[in-house]
Length: 177
Image (cartoon, rainbow, N blue to C red; front, side, top):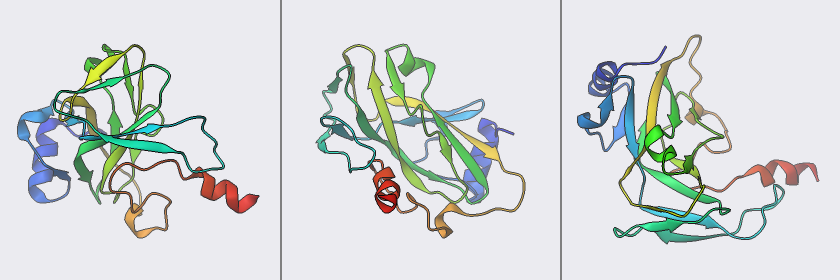
């Protein structure tokens, strides 16, 4: 079940959900409107699942950053979010989608206990200018059933992520080669 906006606010007040920075005005009926952070990694050249991704990192200036089609960008959320009680689901929204920006299509699930600034996979259908701090999507919190198994207490691949992170699939593939 998805928490309502008022239930999210109550869980934040009780310390069951962390959203930092938290702005109650960003609550909607069933979600929290998250924002784009101020850093982007531009993935350079061809990608190979068996090798670390080459990238250049740049700040998203207040005057904006022009995204180009055919380029993979990795961004980061402004907010750090987490909960030991609830799972999270991070999505783009219609507002960014209507600009031809696809955000975080492949990995929307945030496990219980995963307290992070989310790495975002960003693609543009057409050239489009983005800005730091702009609303970029919606975050929902889900009630989990069964025994809680905190992501932070596991030896998970991305448990220590606190910002933009490239794919670490090369670690898995490299161990098999």
